[in-house]
Length: 558
Ligand SMILES: Nc1ncnc2c1ncn2[C@@H]1O[C@H](COP(=O)(O)OP(=O)(O)O)[C@@H](O)[C@H]1O
Ligand SMILES: O=C(CO)[C@@H](O)[C@@H](O)COP(=O)(O)O
Image (cartoon, rainbow, N blue to C red; front, side, top):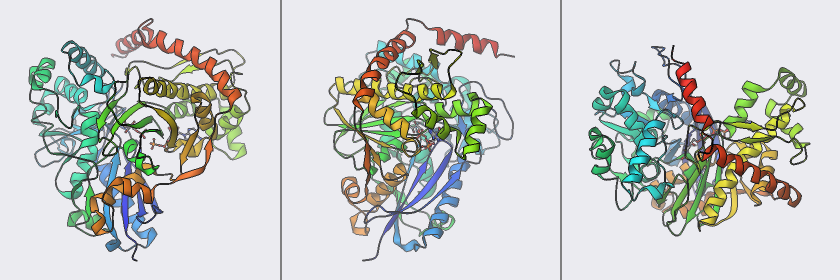
């Protein structure tokens, strides 16, 4: 039998990667990464050099296309697979990563008339400058008793489509006016491959308050926010919303030529990175929490019923795997916090020591931190370096370190940061579990489980649960390829549904991380302290973080 293949393209925060996957067994034949030429644009705009304000995070749409034209031909070349054997392609993306486009589907930032306006660019998921809009959305939605609110854990995030769109209206009404549509980057890139933009049910459901039965919120609700938003859903957000696994269209001849693929192959509707990873670790039933661990951490879980859970990002019917309610929660920085520490705060002697040993600074810190007993450092942290996504849903919260002394060592702080993120995850696990969405097992995928064993042991100890690790290093891309195979269908050599695709293609590692009872006991005590700090700083007892932010904003006006 001739092997068939699909390509999965995973769009992360700093780079995109293509993986060529064999459909019979999920073997990853070749992979290639293309770093985004413009990376995250958070200081000044390309070309005009316009300085961006705090909390902005933009991207350049051309970088996404470069991933297709660089990484896809590279995997084809490396593998030696003939283009005729590749039957489908799927992508996954960070989200809500959104952009305004014109009638032709072209990003407004490609237009000389608009590109000096930062609102014409892609707003990356971690663009956090729409918190004021989010606060108002939540206040007004709560006052009106909007029924969608409980589906989003009681709060709509500043990271999502509505807050970002409203920020455009408030700060750049001309861009709002001229935008034909606001689209998720995942849908835009798929549209570039097929020649037609369609929306997917996953980003629409989790990031744009779309519901399978009810559609978007009512016009009255949008109007209550701002009369100019009344028609947002039927104008800027219009367009078909197709379920995950659907075929968005076929690869155009032009893009096929640039990507080294055959024209006409099936392209799946867009997906979200964390969501695509779920079938890629073989999770297609409830009770198994999948943690996509990278710069941020997304928690994905299936349930048979729709439950209300404080601070979850959302519950969407068929949002991850058809037939189940897909639950999502998350932490908006995890790896990014460790990166901050390594890049901004370790002393030179640590960097030098790591260099001498021929290992990375992370690895050196991990090694030294592993020698500590649990609780030995006396240092505790709150993991809010990029705000709090779940369960507080507040991007104005910031980080905390408690317990520092003149004897505190860098690796003790590093360990406290690893632990803080694990406590943040425990908070989420408990929120689900205590509200009737069972979390019996943990699965981890993404870059971090491959990079840091201490981190994974800490997560097992803090949550008191065994953790299974994805065999693939590229789980979102593998999942995206599965959806590409589903879009192609069994008749073409793919699969008819993602459950069948997962049965054949998903794998986990044999080795798991099991909780160590002695560590679990100490972490219970530390978690109780974390919880107290969490509520003190996060639930209004002391709003020092918000006051500091206000002072900082005032002081930064030059
Ligand atoms: N040894 C390590 N221990 C902990 N974190 C690490 C280590 N090496 C890199 N990181 C962090 O991993 C993150 C990148 O994760 P990865 O999954 O590769 O990326 P992404 O989330 O963009 O897909 C960065 O934030 C980086 O700080
Ligand atoms: O918000 C989501 C998913 O809902 C993610 O796309 C976002 O956290 C970015 O994820 P990564 O850290 O790039 O893996």
